Length: 276
Image 1 (cartoon, rainbow, N blue to C red):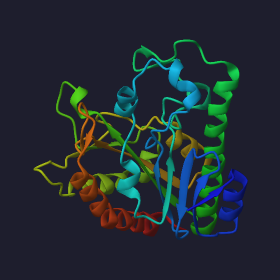
Image 2 (tube, rainbow, N blue to C red):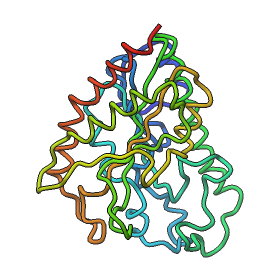
Image 3 (cartoon, one colour):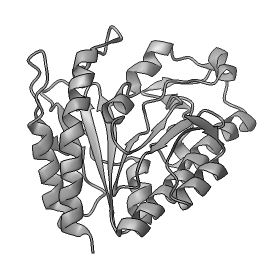
């Protein structure tokens, strides 16, 4: 892995170079081993939190971790194209519109002891903006090369906070073209439902049961590119103890191993169906 500026990353993408890089401000990573027709993203994987913000933050390190999506990058790390956030969504949220990306309150609790000054807020928003410059360049290149693209937008959610039974997997599809892509969405749901997980964990999968696919990552790509489908794919945090902050590596590895086969197969099915 090398450290590159956003401009350097974009130039490599435009030249179809393969590379592994971290942005020069360490806010995100990108890996391109091959310019295939599918992309994997983990925008909430990051946990970094800028030191100048520590003393002003009312949320604990655990409270931040609880709302992040730990291990989602590891679940998709085997695939040819992976882009992932390094910073906590409590600094700025890559899955929210720029005007809402820096929180004042988070999950019902005031975030800052004192409101952030404009300079600190802008530093965070610059990272958000740079990430989407790279996303734009990447999806542009994939559509140019293959005519279509599919993006697997990996997230996780805290299933134990719900007062009803919730699925292991949830697909949020309210902001994609379900008339056009409905069959391939259902195919992905069925693939997830067939994944075998350890420790007796059942692999149920539903559409728009807990979350609806309202994130900015999905909406930015969907609204900008007419031949790219983004599948907001949420796994319940069955791979950790969300109250004790313990990761279950055998479950994370099982998910990664399953996606090594299920995800490329599904991406190939998408390409066969929708490429020109």
